[in-house]
Image (cartoon, rainbow, N blue to C red):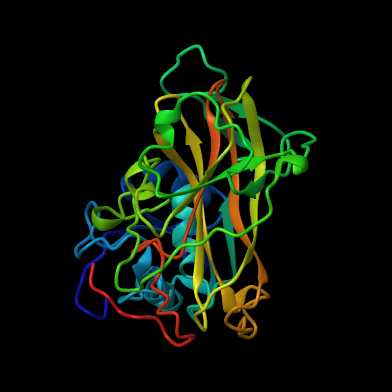
Length: 357
């Protein structure tokens, strides 16, 4: 690479002098395990280049997740494409191929300016895992399923409304409410809603820290379904939850959160987490995301919400498949920061602050 780092790379050529079309596969696992795939390409008349990504296995350097594909400090994916096209055995046509995490290496090369003839990211039809109660081996869920499409069956959208707790039965297990600084309720019954507003103070100098989630890095961004109880004690976190479920509840498909928000700042963010709240009170993170208020209507232009005005935002909480066990609660956690998973909003409508991890 231009910085002198050597990336372990194997080249497979078909019989003959060529030149040939070339398929590039960059892997985070082990290029030596791709020789069978390389032989398949060879039989079809394609040359192939199999490469260990920076900092892994036989390649030199430091692993930085997928950032060095073309968007990080290094441009390894783009540089490899340019190098391949210059080789005399290449006919100028280069494709990228690979499934799963290897597909991410392709995505990270997109927009790099290094021309590819095509890319092929293999997706497994619809082979998905339905999560369940981890403490109960007899609980529904915790199984692999196969379907022809997603969502895998005719789904029924169900709206849960966030509300203040007035007039709503908290149900059994009152220990849940202990240690939660700001709390509200979730209900499907519009008749039970007590209309009002609940808020919190967000301080960009005192950020709500990331604790799990869909993170690929190690270190300060350890990923996973961590218990969020310690964050619920913060005054800048709002936790809403249903009454205990009378029977298991399956959630399969897309999850969206609609909020009507107001702030006294020029701009701010709202973060959201979907939780599975267990009998004993642990709050297991399932999915999370963020929405910047000034970008609530799209990324094409900023649309500032005047301080004190009320605006609608929608937070995409992605898709999942889960069966919440009887006695569990559906929970939502809302704040204005989740750092360092998401960048800081200084509430000024300007560029974000830079803070060391």
